[in-house]
Length: 443
Image (cartoon, rainbow, N blue to C red; front, side, top):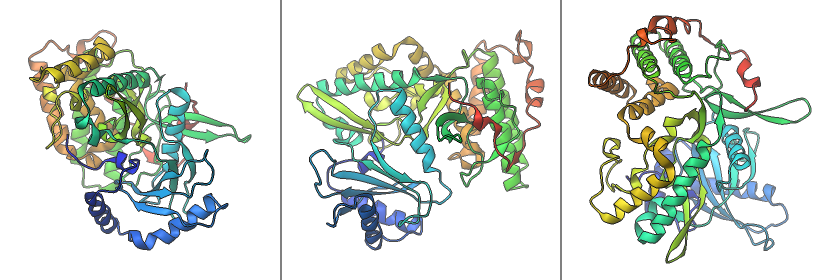
């Protein structure tokens, strides 16, 4: 597991590492933003607006940010014993980013699960504030980053964390919805908020692009895939009319989805709550004693969505096959570890998650389905190495079919043939009208 950007560093109570400072300075240059030292007075002003009962200065700390957020630590004067003193300020790097979506899924998780998350103190999704950017203030979670801490734990402490990790995954999967997509909130004329699920955006600016999709087309796993590929095709061609080559790519990716569905890979068509970046870097942990440790919180819920169950079954190889230098290779996920302690950690995890999870985690067709999902959500233009990923999925699926008994989708009883299935999505376009799907409440 590479020591890349760690969102959990924003919540660690330890001092800022020098590498974090370097990354933060580089990020300031990369995103053309005000240097940290010049930004501190604005943060002090914000603190006085949030906590007007004190005139003392707040301790402001540079923390490692990410692609979408600048992150700053705040230590407040000890107002009362009951009030936390350490907070994290997350400031959007872009005015078009939608922090209210992170708030919606964060609150949804708090209401529907027992998974620990950081308490949100206040937020402003507008630029009409002293920072002139959208922001969120959260209580700083206790403990240290699991990414930094895991290899310092003894075996019993690791087993404790692995058991909690497995149960976290199962608790998320237990929350189901008939639709795939992002969780958002809407408010009626009486001020009552409801949760809704809508498909992902298909514009590089991350704004709320809308289409003329039939409200039912995103309900099955297959239709979710076909709808997304068609939406991305329309969006890509609108952004760059010369990208006519994308039509063939999206058509071939759609054919892969149709064949996967015909092979029975998409199951019961339920969508499950999934944290799409559930990695060690997004967890905070405290050591309790020589035989136990506790996950104090899971971070970065902006990537959490409702998705097919196989999406949330990416095997957490860092548990039993930690790689300091690069990302673990999922092709080796089910290899038996050489180290007996690592074998036991793998067994502890597998015993808790059960056989259904393991099927989705280890079978090669579901590994490909996860990669297909990545392109369906992010498109060819915005998926990292999108064209390469698409080529690999298409080629590996063809090879997998050649050495297996996957049925021909055109001969499967009760299934549309490939051509007919694709024609059903030809009407999709992108416009600026209100999305009729946003009125549908989460079940």
